[in-house]
Image (spheres, rainbow, N blue to C red):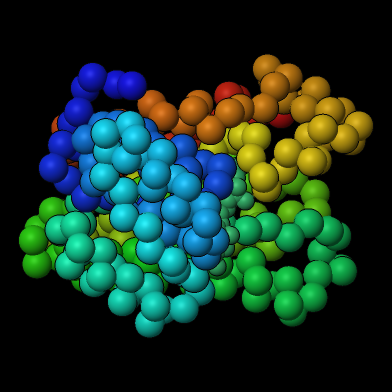
Amino acid sequence: MTTHRPLEGRVAFVTGATSGLGQRFAVILAEAGARVVISGRRQERLAALADEISANGGTAVPLILDVTDPAAVQAAVAEAEARVGPLWLLVNNSGVSATGPAETMSEGDYDFVMDTNVKGAYFMAQAAGRAMLPRKEGRIINVASLLGVRVLGQLSLYAMSKAAVIQMTKALALEWARHGINVNAICPGYIETEMNSDYFRSDNGQAFMKRFPRRRIGQPEDLDGMMLTLADPASRFTTGAIISVDDGQQFM
Ligand SMILES: NC(=O)c1ccc[n+]([C@@H]2O[C@H](COP(=O)([O-])OP(=O)(O)OC[C@H]3O[C@@H](n4cnc5c(N)ncnc54)[C@H](OP(=O)(O)O)[C@@H]3O)[C@@H](O)[C@H]2O)c1
């Protein structure tokens, strides 16, 4: 438990908080003093996380939300503000992947990845931005990926979607700079979560990991430092930054 609580009294909205990185972000933002709105589609997981955060002395409000529905996204931000107060931070974290050779990807695969990673992230950012603009302050942290800046085989749709998140970050940072909203992106390297744990336990996954400069994958807590830095009100001069947190995997 951190003793530094720079987010005391502030509200953070985390999408995709039902597992992996989003779950960890919610926990550490709450430890840093934020009241957290935790969202995702799996109700039981949201309830369990809210209980865990409360047991630790924090405040967490669970909101069921599918980010692919722009009207639901707009309503969720309004509901979050009505229940816990003005949003200081959006962590735009929900994401999915589709793996396979480009020549086999279907329209359904395309829509699945783009609807969640691009459309979902864009309308989440828009809804948060609309709420923050009149107040002239706020933070948006987009969770992009190593694959937004480089490519690897069989992940074309995912790489395209994360490149879009990176350009979205820069575009919104530019438009909203004069309104006091900072928009940044984290590009994580491979972190062990439900998205990839089966793969990294397989022989192929173990062989792939050996190509990484440090021959290891990360754990969700390896992103704590960058998340807390970007969320901190003291980071007011950082906007439009695309920050790799990948243990050097961009150089594999
Ligand atoms: N793990 C890595 O190595 C890695 C590396 C770079 C970037 N990332 C990015 O980090 C983010 C989190 O990934 P993760 O590794 O933590 O994966 P994960 O464990 O599979 O979690 C993905 C989260 O996204 C949520 N989600 C998926 N579709 C959604 C939808 N339509 N509406 C709302 N929420 C939705 C899921 O919640 P529900 O199913 O409950 O809705 C879940 O909480 C993603 O954007 C991913 O691309 C991960």
